[in-house]
Image (tube, rainbow over all chains, first blue to last red; front, side, top):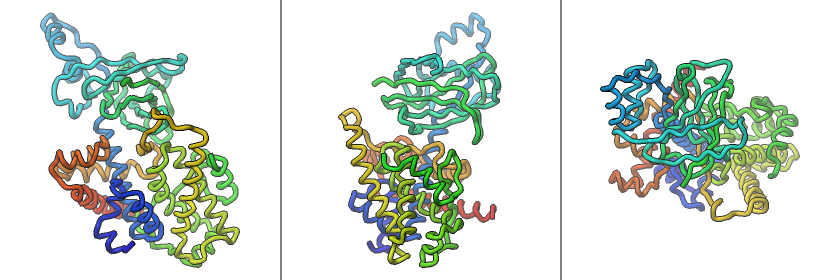
Length: 214
Length: 221
């Protein structure tokens, strides 16, 4: 393969975008394993793509601490009944909780049923989740003798592959945590949600398995 | 499974490489052009003689390339890691037996060739042990692992800044391609751009990213 032609055609980008045919892939691999310049191009493009995917994943999945219930007056009770759940949670957070996070891409009111996940330690569980709307709210308790101000949520497929990771403030004591998982990333499959303390040595505080139904 | 974890452990013990994460090889994070080393006769000689600096460079340089190559073909991250380890074990063992490369500048091609053989064996082993059914026929999972050498907090911040500077359309294009993994033809049609535009977009973003990485590397040197 002619190096100059490969560069002009942006073959490294084509390789990372998986636009090359199999013979082209093999030929390009044979080239860049011997060409430091092209190897650098491939590494940079792949590194950008992977980190972009991680960034998009963090932005799409936001961990929301479930707020303390707002004291209901007759007027507000009517209001809560009238407004869909997701918008209700957003307004309740604005009014009663300091550490709320802006939920991106929640373009309008949506109705969603939160699924309560039970931890795996309580025996084999058969928890099923259905995808309705843009987000799937997953609600779970964090049971630990050493609470952390923030937690990391990692969603893995049962095979071990990471789907996304995100981090958020801990909920008030006694309250569950809610992860708004983007429905687009929850294809029908088995998943494991791992909740950990932040940091490279962050210890695990919870593990929840569930199945997304077709 | 050929080699795999057993190979990794044997590799660490036999070749004396510094290892972390429960015995797995540690790959130095490559931030810029590796102009300290050239794949010449001296390099191969020092690699054969277990020079620690050369070994670190070797695993760092080819580690990322092997990951990128393997994950497009193997379904599970663990298989990618095992194949990578096995490739390194075989390459170094071959060099130290004197069966290595006749031309040192072909070292990279040799690594690629060994990797191809390892892949073939993995395919055969996988086919024998796990018969494919229609339900199992899924494309390789290319999700970046939380422990992937290609994803780091620093890189994510650099990419975040680059993405923030992009026009909304380009940012959305990249999101649909890399995060939502939509079909590229459909995405191009939706945004009324040609397939070549995707390469140009990635090319420009990559250039900015590489500049940012090199600046960062200079700051920490």
